[in-house]
Image (tube, rainbow, N blue to C red; front, side, top):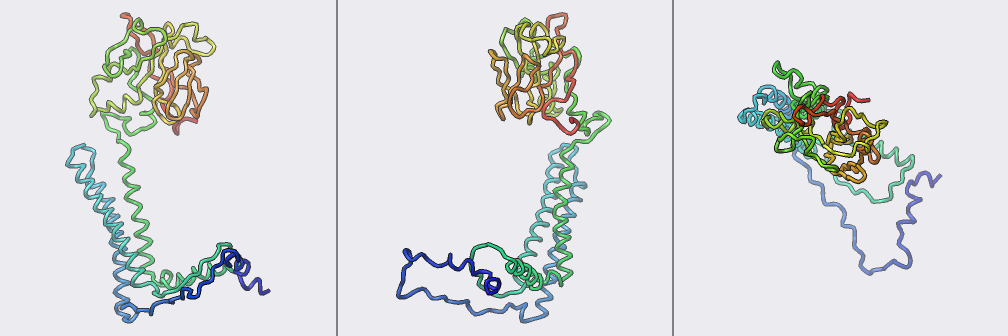
Length: 359
């Protein structure tokens, strides 16, 4: 029974030093004890306590106002125009709102702990952290005492304002996620549709394959056996950076390779999508979108350097190693009347990593 009442009895033996290591000193350090307790002004004066409570919940409500202003500023100062002055105003006023929300919340919490919560000194002995029923009951009691001493359960104004400020402080960050997605417009009706944006590239029927980055069209006769060339749509070279050059290039970039026709067995390849042993595959890895830029011409393997996924070009770029879940999308190609390599169509499946439309 005594063993159950003393929750630390099973640990006391481990606190004792080993006889071989114990050192007896004639003047051991004495416990200095705790300094005399100094009462705060809020402990002495009830009016000061009321003022401190009002200050705390006023700061919490000020934090709430800052969060609301950050959300309002996001709508009052839009950046869709792309003008630098609008972007500066948007960043300035949203930043001020978030700064006010977090600063007031932090100052309020500190002032609450220093001026309102119970103020006393105590010593907590260090010991091993193996819990028993009595230890758990003590922990529950500690939480109960903390709630009583902090006034969290009694001071409804502080509790309500704190909860409101904490919840509101998250909302500006959530609101800013809206700006990550473009909006559709009459000129570009699919700008706000990520499924359509990820499913289509600039490749289309008759689009010539051009060398990246010069934009010079490439003939089938220009490709030597075992070569690999990075190609882009010819029309991409005329697109400016403001019109989405990098975004379109990231989706449309292609690796063009030439093998012997007999190295592309019909049972593993769509021969009608290739021309005289020339095949074109997306350069964007189907794992997480890294550039598949390494080609081993003896084995006809493509390697993604990021996570080591490998694709076999002689078998429709099938995955033979690594975390990629599906083959590289193939671009159907042929030649035009002048001998230039052209696309038969766009990719027939989304390029890059699998996303929510793929099951």
